[in-house]
Image (cartoon, rainbow, N blue to C red; front, side, top):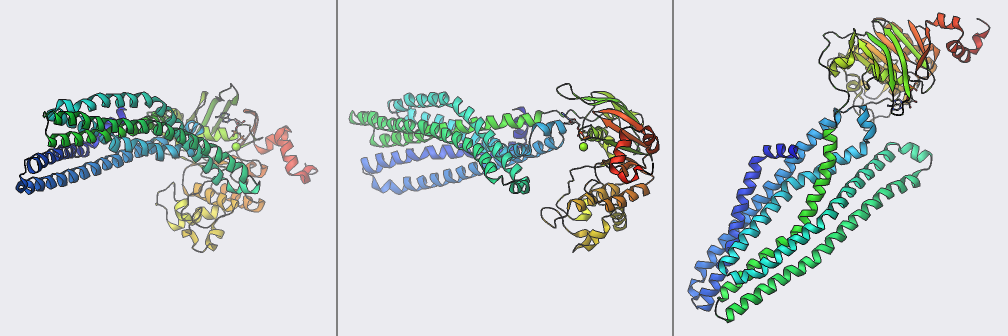
Length: 573
Ligand SMILES: Nc1ncnc2c1ncn2[C@@H]1O[C@H](COP(=O)(O)OP(=O)(O)O)[C@@H](O)[C@H]1O
Ligand SMILES: [Mg+2]
């Protein structure tokens, strides 16, 4: 709420414009019935027809001014809605980007998309248009009531009795609308999520013939949305029908009351007409009241959801220090990572990767290898122990320093839908020469196939361009790491999608970069055998460590793995 006020304050000029024209509009609209009263009383009842134009022409001017004022008021409150949406959207998106991995595990992309679109639209619309409209109605009703009483307190009586009844009924039916809107906004998020997931994995869906199941899954959230929308419509219909009846009764009673007064000679015919017009002017806002309250309820539900995102404090935060010079140094000092159920994903892992050295990590799936990479990048923090670079705990460094000396290539490759050049350039922001780019691509065994593409390095890849094979994508992502010129490269199973031949070439290139520090996580012995130290992980613990020769001599896990991967060499040893 405080946040909304902060944004609203920034739009004060628009609010002011809208408010000023609102007053002008209301004042001029309320003048209309007075002129008509005058026409009836003077020109018709008193028979002074010659005065007609002197009253009717100002009346037209009054209506034109009221129309223009209402137009400006409405337009400026629409502008407020858009401006509020923009502020909210900017902050929400920035806040989402600053979140850590824990956040993204709890909030799926479909839900986040729904929050940044639908919910922000709802809140923006309500803080601008709906809020101003509500204000309009309140002032309009107050002023028109005042005009009514001024003409004849008796004629105002029906309105004064029935309006509060409608208002109370509106407020009473509102809490249900709140809950339903809340559910409906969750339905939209579910639909979004289901669609993003299905479309993102469309190949798997088709391959396994899961179209029906996926369609059912979508239908489920869609049906729930439909049900809640219907209930809201039902609530609305239940509300509007009796309200319309009440509003009509209000006008009938006004005619009746005033009619009696006219017959008794206590009121003129013109006044009767004015009372009737004013009472009608009071009836439409009453009917809008229900709609307004529903919109407020929807906005409250949406705001709650957006606030949850904005208030989420990332657990991975900047530390006070910063690194002056990039360094490949990386030390794990008795690092343990426990997850929710007390399971130790990593258990007392220590190593020191010195600049220019290579560390190989092997281990079964689920043994904690990627977790080491995530800790090194500070995507997560250890439960105990510390991850350091140059002797400084990563938690004491700002995130930029903690990450900018490392480039990571992961199992799940991500390339932007953009040209190859701009994909390779990501870490450098356009500072690389063509030669440097080609060098990096060469080292990743990618230059050859890139050169063959229709537009070479300027070929657009990804969703909007040329499709690359898994191995080609992997090589581009490796080239990106080389091109980043960061001193520490982390390869997390990065060469697994390559064929033996290409992998060998990449490995050769990796060895060629002797000045770099490297952490190579792999399944194949060939990828790590030249490393200065090799660590074998088992259930999060270091089971074996040493150089290739030392580990072979140990005849432990590493040796066994070697034997399964190179059965032909059994005799040679
Ligand atoms: N944040 C987490 N919460 C719960 N379990 C986790 C978390 N991170 C990793 N794990 C679990 O820790 C184990 C090691 O994961 P990972 O490091 O990805 O293994 P590897 O890369 O060696 O295959 C897996 O069993 C995984 O399910
Ligand atoms: Mg892994």
